[in-house]
Amino acid sequence: MTVANTQSTIPPAPKKNWQRFSLPWGITITYLSIILLLPVSALVLRAATLTPGEFWRLATDPVALSTYNITFGTAFVAAAINCMAGTATAWVLVRYDFPFKRVLDAVIDLPFALPTAVAGITLTTIYSEQGWIGALLAPLGLRVAFTRLGVAVAMVFISVPFVVRSVQPVLQELDHSIEEAAWSLGASHWETTWRVVLPPLIPAILTGTTQAFARAVGEYGSVVLIAANIPYQDLIAPILVFQRLEQNDMAGATAIATVLLVISLVLLLMVNLLQAWRQRYEG
Image 1: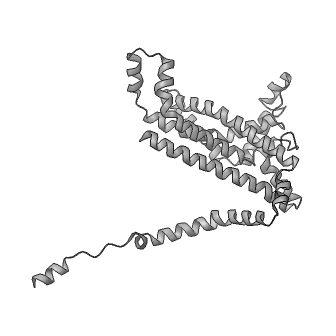
Image 2: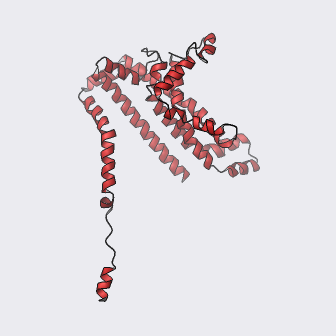
Image 3: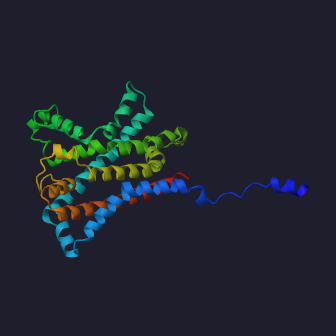
């Protein structure tokens, strides 16, 4: 009788991890395969049908090379601007109180929700020679709309939230008493900012800047409206891919798209490495 009671109270053997998580694992793999892996695989397989020489010729076409230069060069400039301005914006939102602060904090996320075509129309209207800002710059000889400068403005607009939202939570968690301790020990405001405040922010700044750069590289909707899309002037690589498709040049579009895909994967790897470095730094 005692043996029977003892056996009845023995809990069932726990399920193995692969049994317990088989359903969520299967759903995740199926979802990612349909949404991400299949389209990427289709592009890679289509590029594999090209011979190495043909792929190199299409990917290094003079027009394509000019679009790489314009795309990545302008995206780098936009990311550098957002690195400084986005960090300053996050600092103001965290450290200062002023009227309509919540409104400004909400407006930062507007490029996330605003359709890129709407952003392009808005920027073109404002920065054209008859626009509010463009009319002021025209007498100075500065043209924004339908120039490479307009491409930079569009890239800055759509990528600024990445830096702000990466730096803002780190600033909120930063203990202000550490700065006060530095001041009490005789450090100036510049030394405190450089040696106390900035080091914890560097991983977040780099992560946000890299994300902003990657987002600017892939922008299409706003740039296609504010730029003249003229080769060697302001034509970017994503728009060139679309133009190749319109010309029924599937091979050329595939080669250029594959180059952009590889560079995007490298940028995402850099973001993951920066985030891992940030976690280790915070830990």
